[in-house]
Image: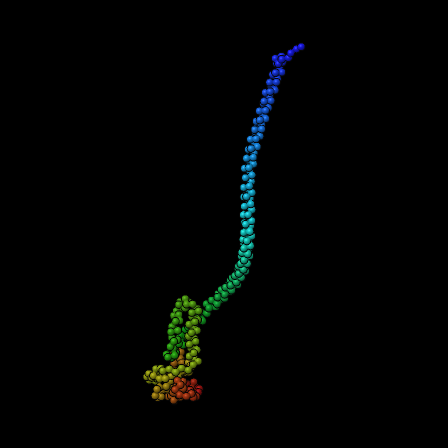
Length: 285
């Protein structure tokens, strides 16, 4: 009978020791694995809590953002309505301004056309007036002579007018045609008034013999004059000449002249008085 001892199986002992060491290593590895798992799990739980807190914060911010967006949307809708109304008013104003602009352009165009027509008419009238200068020269000379030949009492007011006529051809060329026409027309109107009226004046006349008499004179326009002295002893009929009036004695007309003057000056009732319109055989009563 044989007895077995461990020393007789040295390889088996080493194997068993190694197996034991392996078991201990495995146990240690498992323990470390479990510990690491626990650590990782704990850390994961901590991180998960942090993430959960962060998520809750994000959800709160998102909810607040949605509330802000909703409020801004409502405000935008309100402002949009107001702005659309303003845009509509501005579009109407723009349309009105465009219409006014078109009307102004049309008016400006018509005004410009009218202005051009007036300028052309002005040029035509200016040319016509310039061609009228020679006629004015002749009329001014003639009117000056007629006024200078008037009896002094009748020439008052017209002398100053003809004095305003150009005194030379150079002055006439520098004076506007319109101004000259106005002065000529004024003198002609004055002469026309004298021609068409009866005039009673007191005047000093030179009688026969060179004597001077202060007499009352009745002018029948500028065609005839009838003079009579205050005492009725002297009377004359005057006719116009190129340079002055000529007076011819007609003592037989004294009473009729005095009567005509009385009627003219309203010192007596109106009555018919005949006076001759001719002189020295050419009388026409």
